Amino acid sequence: MESRTLQTRLRQRRDQEKKKALLILLAFALVLGLWLWYYFVYTRTPEYAARSVAEACARHDSAAVQRYVNLDRTLSRAYDDLTDDMLRYDAALTAENKVQYEQFYDVIKPQMLAGIREVLMRYIETGEWTLPQGTSMTKGRQLGIDFERFLERSQIRNIEYINVESAHVVGDTADVQVSIRDRVTEIPFSLRLRMERAQDGHWQVIRMENYKLYLDALATRQNQDIADYIAATYDIVSSYNQMLESQRARFSALARQAHGVFYGDTADAVAALIENETIPTLKERQNQLDAIAIPRGAAYLANLRHTSTDLSIAAWTHYLKGITTGENEEYNTAETLLKQELEIELRITDIIQHNTVSQALPDIP
Image 1: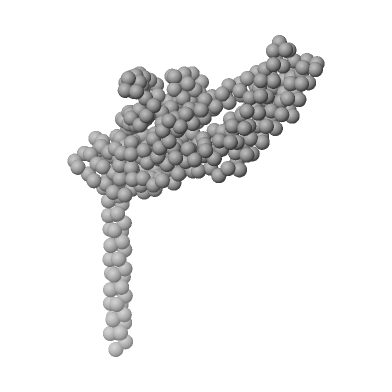
Image 2: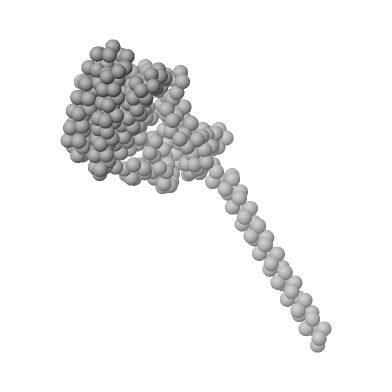
């Protein structure tokens, strides 16, 4: 009796062990299957490529971005779409001027693409948007165009990836719908990416099919917000600019009187003008502007104004030090800062002028 009970228990234990072994085998097969599917199927899909681009940007992996995006083809098409969009919607251009601008943009295209690629790759690697420096042809306005303004108009600095919506594959090409959002206006958009299969089986983005529609969606909102912001700040800017213009005129008169060399009573008068009037006026104007609610689409313009004020205050501060100490280095620093301020002011004027021409249409730099 005891022998049969023992045999029964041993048989039950063997059955349980067989079940455990079978479950372990099934689990291993499932894991292996998932691994094989992931590495030999999913990683060769357009969806994987699209997600990999966003993930590569997040971890600052420029090599991975270049693997899944054909930057030359994508940027070239985006450049054509952007310049065409700007010219098509600029109501201030005649037909003849549009042709001239088209030719101009074609001539500078290689240098512009090189600059855009440089800025984009540096952002991917560092997470910071920095403009071309040194001997780059896209530094400042060397090509006859404000590169910073052009970059802002491209909207690429504020794109936020959300997720992959869908993918439709036909042979070696695919259309992938990607949900994105503009960080500034929070406008959502479904961006359609055209992809091609590379020889080794992975997919690459070759262009953004509906990039123009994205630009239009943002421009309509931004231009209206800019128009509202300009109207809300008009009285502040107008009144304070009149005061600043009067102060600059007095400064110029004193500078002519001193023949550029400040000493004695003239130096005291200039120092008092800068310290007691010009710098306080600049600060008061910015405080007034900061008190105005800024529409989302006008944030870029508002930031430019703030930057211009900071540069102006810094320049006048160094100029004041130059007057009181006589050090040429202070004057040189002031001149450098004033040039930077002038560049910002030109950008501000450009935005306002084009917004005035067409409040609800895309503008050109």
